[in-house]
Amino acid sequence: MKDKTKSIWAWFPVTLLTALFCCVLWGSATPAIKIAYKLFEIGPDDTASRIMLAGARFFLAGIMTIGFGSLLSRKVLIPESGSFKYIAVLAAFQTVGQYFFFFMALSHIAGVRGAIINSAGSFFAILVAAYIFHFEKFTIRKLIGCLAGFAGIIIILGGFSLFGAGADATGAAASSQAAGLFSGGITLQGEGAMLLATVFYALSSCCIKIYSQKENPVTLSGYQFLLGGTVLFTVGYFMGGMLIFRSLSCVLNLVYMGFISAGAYTLWGILLKHNPVSRVSILGFMNPVMGVLLSALFLGENREAFSLSGLIALLLVVAGIIIVNTEKTSDTSKSKRKK
Image (cartoon, rainbow, N blue to C red; front, top):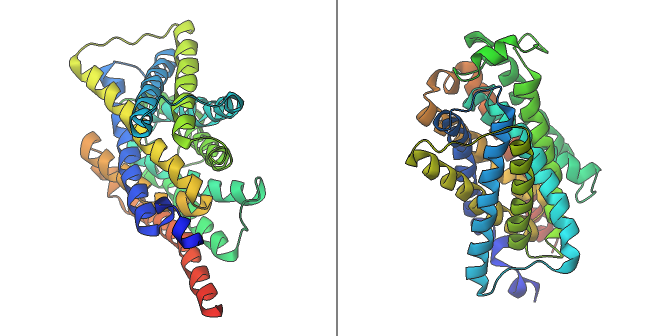
């Protein structure tokens, strides 16, 4: 009976393909945001306008998510009265917290560097799920996988010092003036902010796992985007920020960034509802790969993407993700043999 009622979203081929599609979308977010900074002429020190841009993106993503979900459900998605507290928590972690630091980081570091560091979220999600929310056990295999992944991130933190401070032309001046934490040129505004964004990602992943059992994940995603986007835009506005649409490219860029979030997070939330947190989070192994490749393609960061230290770091991150992900396969095969 369990097999008959099992959701198609829990079938591994569907889970894998859906997760990879999400990774392609998320991977394109890094170059899209950095291109937006140029189109809207937002400098690395213009925090207010950067927050407004993030808010506009997620407000639009909320409208898209709710609209798309309503069409699929053939009814307007309205959260239950008891779900507003879940929406508020998700908005605080997933949108306001994560993307305040994510948008800050990308104005101070190269896209390739940011994409690899951002992969730390997958490993933090496993630690949070095991030790804070107690969803799963932290096994030896997960430990080895996390160590490999964090080793890759450590390499990228210091590896790109061969090319300078690790920032592109947009944030080079700001990064060189910021206080470095290590010899690799790590800054609080750049690498530090990106790491903080990954912590918020890990917390939000586990919250989605809990709340999606009580509320439609598409509804949760849509309304938390609306709330989080409104908060970010309002804060940025009162801080003196401005968004000037200088061309049609600005509009198209903003619409695409909204679609990235609407599509990826809606599907990711559905996967988290029907699968273990570690299984879904770890399937994000293509996220850093796509982020690196698309940054090289659209931002011209070929030197960073295909440097020796960059490739080694990326391979370690991917290896760590695969090591952890294979645990489910081996556990399943063992249980079948016992039966």
